[in-house]
Every structure is written in C-alpha cells, then in structure tokens.
Image (cartoon, rainbow, N blue to C red; front, side, top):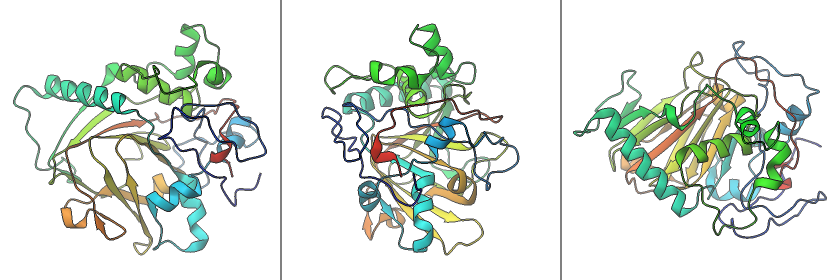
Length: 325
C-alpha cells in the first residue's frame, strides 16, 4: 500500500459499536483498536536504536499506520507545517481518542493518586521546578509494579496460555462491546496497551506517573533523553484535556499542536520523537488550540517508553483498516 494517505478513522469513543469497515479489507467488530504496533526506526533515528529488517511483516504493517484524517482534522493544528510534510506528522504521531472508558479513567486516577502518596509521603506538594528545568508545578513517581522492563507482552500472553504473540490472539481476546469490558487494574491497562499496539518482544521502561497542578503546571518543549528510552514515547491523558505543542528542533517555524482529550492514548515515534520538542504550555493563556483557551484542570499522564536496544518487530495481523495508509 502507498504511504500517501490514510483511510477513515475508527471512533474510539464508540467502543460499544461495531467497527465500520470502509476499506476493501474485512475486519471483525472491535471495542478498541487492535494490534497497532510501532516500528523499527526510520533513517532519522539515532544510531542507538537498531533497525529491524524492512522485510519483516510487522515492520511493513507498522509503516502503514497513521492518525486518520477525521481525527487529525479535529485534534491537530498543522497550519504551520508545510503541506508536503503533514502526512509524515500524522504517521509519526498516533492519537486514539476515547481509548479509556470513564470507569477506567477513574480507576487509573485513583491508583495514580495512591501511588504518588505512597512514593512521596502524606504531605505531597507540587514541585516548582524539575531537575532539568523542563517541568513546573508537578509531582511524579515511577510505577514499577504496573509493568516494567522485566517482562514483555509476549511473555505475559504465554504465561496465560493465550499464544506466542499478541497479534495471534487479538480478535479472540478483545471484547465485542463496551459493557462489562472495563480493565480493572493499572497493570491490566498497561499490558493491554502493549498487547494491542506494540511488538510482543519489546522490553519496557517502568511506567511513569506525572501530575500537573491545575492552572499552573506545565512542561517546556523538550526532546526526551535519547539515552534513557527507545523510539516510542507513549502516554495516557487523565483528568483534563491538554494541548501539546511540538516545535521542530532545527526549524522552530515548523510547529504544530495536538488536542489531547482526557481518556486518550497517544504515542510519538521516529521523526516526531527525535526531531520535535514537545511540551504543555505553562501559562493558561498560552494553553490554546486553534485560538480557544483550553481549561487546565488537574491532569495526570501515565507515560510508557520502550527500552533501548534492538527492536525486532513481531508479526501481526488484523490492523483496523482506518489506521492504514
């Protein structure tokens, strides 16, 4: 398939409805997106990450993924990106609105608050500045017991007797409707993300919890440390909508914004991960999307990053056609 255009999107907010098949491929009804997996890096990736073979079926399938046009039209402001480069942006920043149900959001918010209290003590206060000067009015901690680098998605599936790869079992394990399908623990959500979106052989850095104070917290534009994690930076947005601004490192005139609705899952990779600084505007008047100020309530993000090392993409099937080129 050509990488020139995306098909129409899956509306993740309608998790209780059948997936509308608008491509020539026939796919079963899904309650959430199946088996969207990240890639080996493109040529823009630092040498610390190892390329996978271009002939690997998982790599080829991954290279067909992008954020669908209708999601991009409502959640991306690409007006300052040259028209010729916009397709690449949508290939390297994947956004899935409504990935979490309201019940799952509440569960994760409560679990994150409990984790922060245990890690930081009863008198949990917001820090004025991060050690590297990037984050302001925040609290943070790791969540190792939610799933880290010790196990991969494929190992967990094997332990449960459900197969050797996540992709091999997706259609048999994904429920067909929203009712009664809520994941009930943070670890279950983390494992679900790894199984549904990423190669089962990948190792992971422990999830990271970051809370920003309502009205005051923010993140200055930055590129995540290249020696701390691999080619994918992923996140769950909880508690409040957020505006993410992304600015090209070498050409600051190239910048775009993404509206991250609470309950969404997103990840940046390849050219966006390595060449665009990302942040959350600190001042309320700057927290705008297409000229509209977006309220800054208390927000918690749960970040997932794959570990450094060879990224051998496993085989996968059944990617919803709306996330293909």
